[in-house]
Length: 116
Image 1 (cartoon, rainbow, N blue to C red):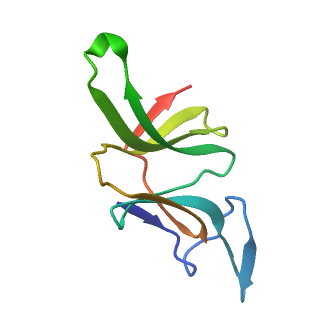
Image 2: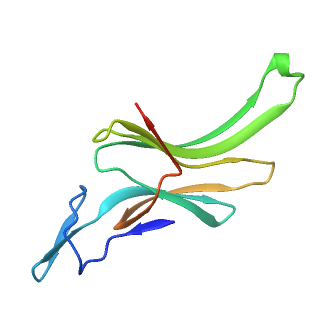
């Protein structure tokens, strides 16, 4: 699910760069796009706060030598004091992960929101 910001319906003030189209003011924001195996899985941004894309791999001695790997994109919205999560997936050998810094007026809805 995405949140689109139609330029003809309202003024959006979320940080980043602004543009004026006639009497309508629109704003874009800096976001992280996350791709797994060439498929875009999330576009995440907040007006004020932090967004983190994390790729991890671990093998613990007490776990019999098995390993685990995953990717996630989450953040903290400083305006609402909420922890947000957009995406989380386990990874297997051969998976490719790409993170792209973009300027956009459309972001995905977080799949989880928790108070700070």
